[in-house]
Length: 117
Picture 1 (cartoon, rainbow, N blue to C red):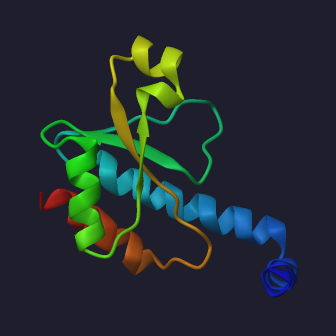
Picture 2 (cartoon, rainbow, N blue to C red; picture 1 turned 90 degrees about the horizontal axis):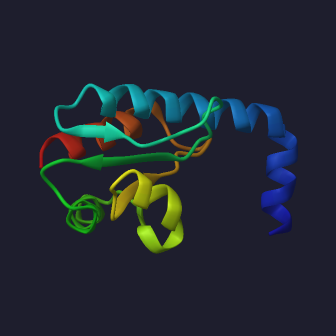
């Protein structure tokens, strides 16, 4: 843990934040261009967590398929955000969290994997 803290401080927390947000922006751009994919992020300022659904594939099935391709995501369920997801008519959505160590090529591979379902 100490080595991770030292590494982050050497890179600079602002640089890490900016890099993670830029990668998340690239992911949002790619996903929003896919038919049937809806971005579910809310708020004026976007973080590096990207939430989305795919109309023709339940979140659990999409997560399994991405995991088989070596891509890690998580599923957020209604019980985690009861009021928000109930208001939006959602039961589950996928979350992806690109970080500063990810590459643009990995983001593009993620988008391609979502597209091939």
